[in-house]
Amino acid sequence: MEKKKPRIKPFLTPGEVAKRSGVAVSALHFYESKGLIKSTRNAGNQRRYKRDVLRYVAIIKIAQRIGIPLATINQALSVLPEGHSISPKEWQQLSSRWREELDRRIQTLTSLRDELDGCIGCGCLSRSDCPLRNPEDRLGQEGTGARLLEDSEH
Image (cartoon, rainbow, N blue to C red; front, side):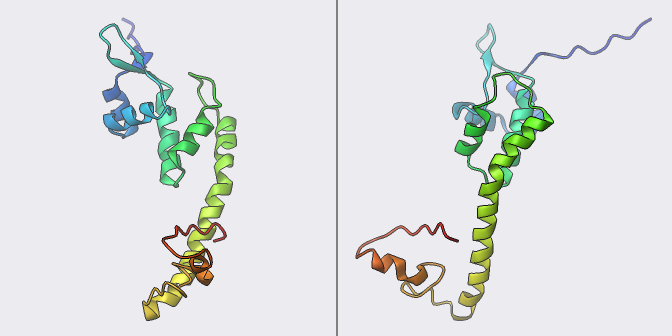
């Protein structure tokens, strides 16, 4: 007697995707609300995901782990055809788009780490002189009032 091979289901429930990907069902719904993944509805109006969603969720989780914002992830995934399984070559192209942003973040964190050593001794966090909070008193040069400092040079 011949053993039957288990049938591979073309669609997965949110619970099945959550179990296999290690993310909560609520995270799947959130990703879907942001346009990162897509589902269909069955006759009972329940969500069903194509199997390729597992790879997309893995990519999203990897990108989030390295600090890539969801908007950037969405932008990268949006160029791929719907229902398309990503090949290793496409993954390399996709991930290379994030390399420059990662390098910039690494440089910023390294600079902050190096500057932090100087602040540990005094702990003043001077609003006019602190190289971390207000480098070269840039906020003061912009005038009075509250200012948002986002230093893109570091």
